[in-house]
Length: 429
Picture (cartoon, rainbow, N blue to C red):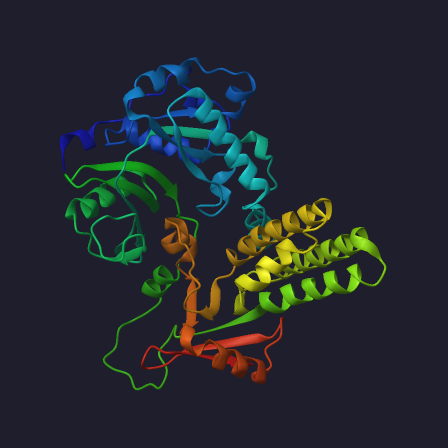
């Protein structure tokens, strides 16, 4: 281990920003690693009060040191962020100037009110996450480093390394997990960091092709209930077994049946009927908007009733023909067409937010889940990994007919079994 990793921490001065009360765990731990001599990029922490009072002198000094980078990464740093699962709040790339930092923080706060709101509400209901004020959001600013993201954590008696944004694999952009990192220094460094901090932790790195390893984040996961750790503590290895079904090849979930094609047909039918029965354009748009709002309310209600759930996608993306028809209805009256089109666009965002909360997606193989590092292999996914179950697009109509014949309805319980050939079988229980 290089000697730089073994530098002792210096005492914090009272003027240090990290000595302020309510500094987020994320900022404290990365500062602790920096002072401990680990290869942490230059960074600065800004509290919400710094933005309120526009106390940007230290930030401007920091940015002047990194003008050549053109870009920085702004990481969320809310005082209560350690009470939420990783990835709840955003990190954004932006320009290395004051306006870029302010913009990024505003975007992080805005996403907490929109795209991340359902996730926050679900964690508050199901996982005792606290009520928070988004305007208390602080940020950590670092120079942007273009490399491979690696997340490391110890599960039981072994380390797990999750990779994303790698440029050296054929499956570019698809996260993957391994117990044996390509760079063995990651294993030694992870052990050293965990021993240095004194608790079980999740560590994020950025690695470069020349072998440089940057430590960019650490999270205390000692309080998380990890199944592998419990098994290692409460088990004994024997000599053999005869069995029919393997463990963890089965799960049960309440299911939401999503049929966007039928939903769009209802909208188009309502537009046609209301516009041509003497009720007028305004009444038609109001009625269709109520239909869209009711659908979004149904999605939110289902997500807040069930901590874990599956989405059965008979159709998730609206067919192009129906989409164009719904968006261009009333095109002869733009003052009515525009609000209808806006409501449909906003509805698609709400559907995406809902889908991001499901841990099981059952749909044709053209539907993809875009996983970030926390979604793919964060500590919160250890016990409940995301399953994406699919059928081939060429069998779509055949499979949907069979699913309708089986009679799946929203609220049913679906059982999913993975057979010996790694093929999923879905049951309506």
